[in-house]
Amino acid sequence: MLAGVDVACWDALAIAARLPLARMLGAPMRPTAAYNSNGLGLLEPRAAAAEAQELVAEGFRAVKMRLGRPSGDDDLAAVRAVRAAIGPDIALMSDYNQALSANAARERCRQLDDEGLAWIEEPVRHDDYATSAELAAQLRTPVQIGENFTGPRAMSAALANNASNLVMPDVDRIGGVSGWLAAAALADAAGTEMSSHLYPEVSAHLLAATPTAHWIEYVDWAAPILQQPLKVAEGCVLPPDRPGNGLVWDSDAVAHFRRA
Image (cartoon, rainbow, N blue to C red; front, side):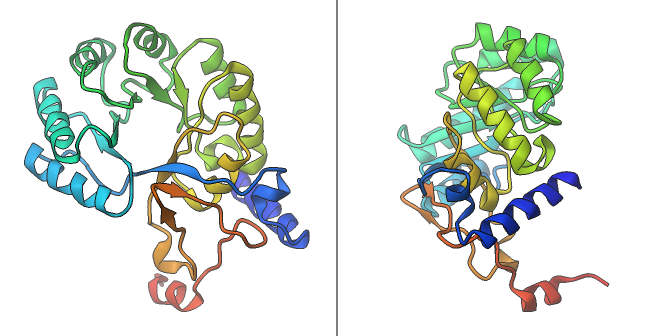
């Protein structure tokens, strides 16, 4: 809840200054490469391949798929089917969502290490920094963690333990705009590329102000209740050039979807 208040306060401050949030933070209105995260759950290979093509066709040069099927061979088959469908020039991220034990992660991640994945996300429990660091050191594929960092101190501990090759904080869990700025400074000092988890409307501004900005996770979940949904152009997201964080609610849509 405090993170939401922090985001609202920064929004109000930027509106009062008549500046987009990115500019309020001293950053240019620069685009960030985006990956489409609207799907690719634990589908069978043919269905995953078809859905991946649909996600790319929405204007993206990267997509993310979920892993954690009953066997490593099942995951491998799905990854290969998606890769064959989207071709070699589309970045393919993968996410285990903390699904694996340490031993299973060692086996499955090695199995996927030659598949050209952009990263393997949260293969083990989010705070198992020891196993995550072992994987990050041994795999050629980057290990990504961070959506479950609760505040910048958790991210500091992960970086100190070399728990991953990449980080991707969540603006809510990291502590709003203020927490994000602290996290971005940590990533910059460590020379670690930093992406976002969800909240693309706000994250577009924050990544513009992040020295080691990498990828923005795009979902369109808020689009039905926004007057001006976030736009994707040439595989990138650009912060909206209007005061504040750019979120303008569609009051009629909000009323329509409100539950009693």
